Image (tube, rainbow, N blue to C red):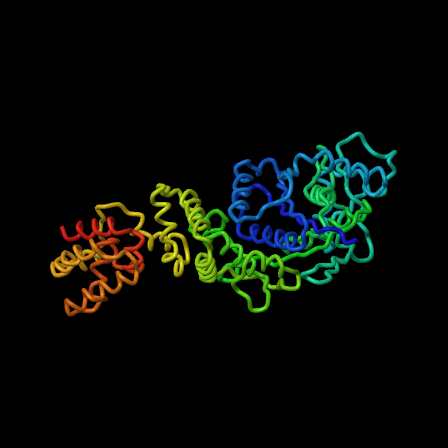
Length: 466
């Protein structure tokens, strides 16, 4: 029977959920969800000085916004410290690790001498094979006994087989002199205890895999499937950093990108399925595999993100879109919509969402349904309401009072009205846009009239001609 897939995302809570971390989480989520497996979340909070509850909260909120649901409780690495230490002591008892009494000064002196002699500065402890009877009554660390000959082969699903000479591996510390476990030990013990079958993470962890494999093998545990993915670079080809602009997942929410668009874009950053650019979550879950991950760093491209976001907005369910826009307004610290505005927005969604790439763009188009009378007009709209157009709108208003309020009839009435005034409807549309929305660029005049309704339309025309 095939073992069920278990992946994990294990961020350190020292800041927000950055885009690289969000993509790692997404890849793990897609791989597990596409195979009916489990996706687990572990907070690697062993660094007590840098780990903060605020950062943990920001990571969880970023995951929630992206829709990356995890199975089971969030696991704290720090809370497993006694279990991690227990494994180090087990290896010590089995002779696979040893007590090292070397001081920091002694290690520094060893490295300086090795450097001066042109030798490897990899520390070789004199305590590795020392007789326990010679052990002093002094602080010690527990080091693992690294293999000293041969090679370690990391079988990686993305990078291929990566071979590291064992004489380049040091006897890694497992337990510090104060009894606290190191991060490298904690990661392995947690992954084993959580049943993680596939470790998908950034390729900056590739060298760690060789050192972590020493622990797996010493404990007789199954080594997980490794998949080290290339990092994300900025448009300039350098590792993505603060200088490239917004980095936190929540910052992109506050900028008005839909979560579905962000998931689609992040999936395409370093992974591909043929020439497919736009796809749904279900398609991504079905298609995602290691074969599609490239070996080169992906470049973050805001224009591509905007393009995909626009496509996702266009196909979104209207009610779901309204709900996500309300969440965007809260995330961006903007004024929440009233119930009436929210309902009006959903009613208008059919004529708003086709060409909007972000929520701010969509809300700008929705201005006509969100404002209350009297409507302030921008400069272009003010210009469209000349004395001539005032007269025309004044004449039009009584005809609309008794008109049938359906699109075909309104179009016929307005076209006939324009013809009677020896003009084209386009000439009439400008003043109507100005009167109904206070803007020169709006959805179709007919859409606005239908959404606003007869009473509100006539009231706005009256305000504009009054």
